[in-house]
Length: 138
Image 1: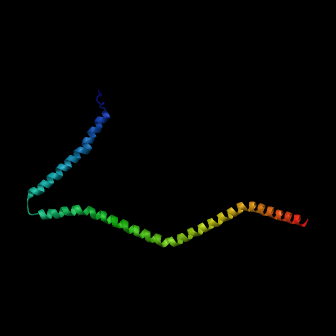
Image 2: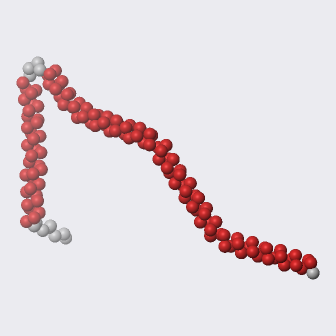
Image 3: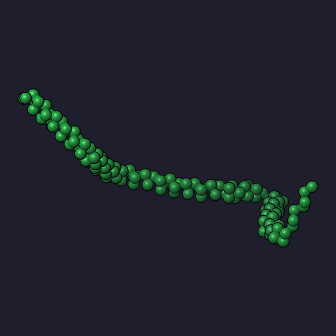
């Protein structure tokens, strides 16, 4: 058997606040909006076309603001792309020069690392040639 959950004062206060701060205003405004719509319908004058037009304006207005924001964003992106297009050759030239310097430095470092080994190999070859020529003469 499960025990019933313990009802703490904090949980009771939370439920009370949930009702008064969330559910009550939601229900109240829903009732007010529906009753206002009912009053408009009950008025029954020939203004149905006018109210339909007003409602359509209120439905389209948020989409127009969103479209305006998207248009501004698109314009900003186009401006940034034009700036990037104009800056690309200069920056690419700098980047290419940097990598040419890196390549030259790497090549110099690799040559410097191999230079002692090559010098020893050359000295050994010269010594072998010199000794071989001495042997041939004798």
